[in-house]
Amino acid sequence: MPKESRIRQQSRHRLTTRLWHWINALCLLVLLMSGLTIFNAHPRLYWGEYGANDDYAWMAVGSSETFGYLRVGQARIETTGFLGNWQDSEGRTRTLAFPGWATIPSSYSLADGRRWHLFFAWTFSLGLALFMIRSLWNRHIQNDLQMRRKEWRPSNIWQSFCTHTKISEIRKSADKGYNVIQKLAYIMVIFILLPLMILTGLAMSPAMDANWPFLTDLFGGRQSARSVHFLAAFLLVVFFLIHIVMVFLSGPLRQTAAMITGGQDREIGR
Image 1: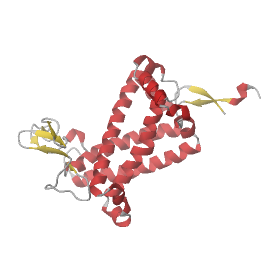
Image 2: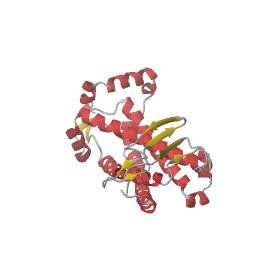
Image 3: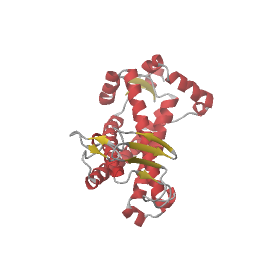
């Protein structure tokens, strides 16, 4: 059979990938902002099953009438004007952990924050499940994200990292397949961080805890699950910021258009 007959055209981003990308972006944004509203109710994190004001918190956002601070372990950083102590749009000093512009709703309401969070959490979970099933079915995971044996070599990972930090190489990578660093990043997000967010979220739910008590045991307690949930969310924000920087460096208009239309066709073997 001629070589040409074994080649077919395929857009850079499949339709399911593009749909999931934008739905997931919306869900994660709302989940983050509504989650900060929930966190404002008790801006402290603990390890174990229980946690209250008199217990030691490994992380806390605190405030007084004059200053705000972030404490991690024994380290304490003043965050006046940003966290803990800030002014609202009317110039009034507020002592909630996170400011109104970073939360949903913008005015503190634990009940509304939970409603937003739970609705988009189930939307996000369903979307992730469908994306994984579809990606296995159309072989997106096998073709684009699967790590080959040689790619696991530390020297190969380091070389890919060094290459991926050069602006000239980033600009040329827009029309290429995923490199090793991109594969590792997407694997960590899709198969570790996102499922971890779902599991820890379920572990914090009193209803789920009553039916599936092993969930809290899995993380060493409900407060530990809350801490892991927060840390996973922080890593997702870091991933998002790096992702945005890479998009701008590699050509924001072309990259955004590709995630809407699918991008230029590329040739792949059958």
